[in-house]
Image 1 (tube, rainbow, N blue to C red):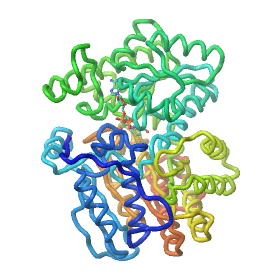
Image 2 (spheres, rainbow, N blue to C red; image 1 turned 90 degrees about the vertical axis):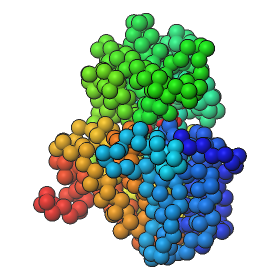
Image 3 (cartoon, rainbow, N blue to C red; image 1 turned 120 degrees about the vertical axis):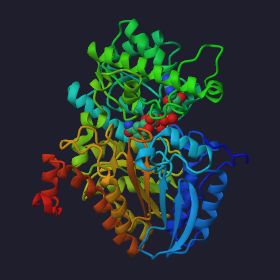
Image 4 (tube, protein in one colour; image 1 turned 60 degrees about the vertical axis):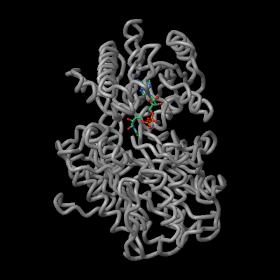
Length: 556
Ligand code: NAD
């Protein structure tokens, strides 16, 4: 990873209704870049790492400062180009074009691997953008919470009669995304044991109320979990240790959880997944001094981890992969049956994707939590029939601690997101909200991702690896009025395994924004329906017919 010599500044986005940029879109992009690096939001802000292993918001601190300066002088008919976290050009476009276009970590397919990327990264030529890190719409762990809840609720519906009450889930990784797991399992009614190697991550989840308590050992964690399970209490327990040690220990102890998954950063064997080391070794030193030895150990560890998951599955646990490419890493290390357990998308999420339904998020540039409360209420009133949305928003309003600028997430689909966005725009225009709202989405999404071990795993027509779709999504967002669009490689599952596009749009209360919001937030989730209808999913075909899409090759 490229390190910078300058001391790292502490970043916090400006708040309130006054801007220094020449338009609200530029101001919003600047505040969102800064918000990604707010110490309350980012996992390692000093090295510009936001989340997901080494997912960064800007290539270097110098690049960060130049982006901020440029956004402040950018005209309302200009577009700033960002190449892997570095501002490379400002060009005259037009008012309806995006103000920023970003491309992160893209490599020609033959060279699309970590080895090539690492050389370029070390030469200062690239940065890893993950998903919402390099597209400036990360909002902290809340950003994934409802998605994680949807996954565990899906598992509950499919395997446990609708609730995780009286079940124990074992998982690992309490990082930026993985930290949502304990709260999501709890929301679905269950008990969880959460293995994490880094005690500071455990403390962060305790401090932000994502995790309830910490056990002193694996035995202690199991004893606590069994007690809560027997009492039918939903509760989350952290335990410090290495998943590659502790999950195989469960097998040796002959103790089987009800659910087993993992969210360590296995997508990145060098900087993400931490192998076990002896008491007199330091993992960071080992990586710096003996990178090949470190990587070999990481692969061996992932193989041991997956063998244990497979054995727990044999003994009756419901096992699923949580989108970090752990199965493939283990397969590379010789575990031939690593894919004997499914990914979370085909297992629990695909039906939602057929409706273009997925994580939709928004951020209050006022910095005032009251603005988010007002939008929560507006959506409760707008979608009274959506029970999942009603219970989520009611819960979230009460329980979620904001990180950085106040923000909210909820799952909405095709012909819903545009309605919500237009309403927010009206609320900015008539003063019900104190400043503009930034609207975006995850790249964990129905129509903007090609990722054969995650979002597009096991597609009905075998089109898992076709990445025309995210490219069409990227172009469509630009043509529809997005405020900034990004195209990324390697998010979620690592280099060589995914291509995906990100969309962000600003509701600044103007009539022009209303038009852009209407088009962009109809077409973007529409791509999810189109992608799945084209692949032959009946549910998507029905949604396409019912909600009026025009699909010439399907006669719709
Ligand atoms: P992160 O890098 O912020 O956190 C990973 C955590 O795993 C760290 O706290 C690290 O200390 C811990 N860890 C690493 N190796 C370990 C080991 N062997 N044993 C125990 N703990 C270990 O990453 P994140 O943002 O939480 O994302 C985690 C993974 O999930 C990534 O691979 C990411 O690409 C993927 N992801 C999944 C989704 C999803 O929806 N399923 C969404 C985004 C990201």
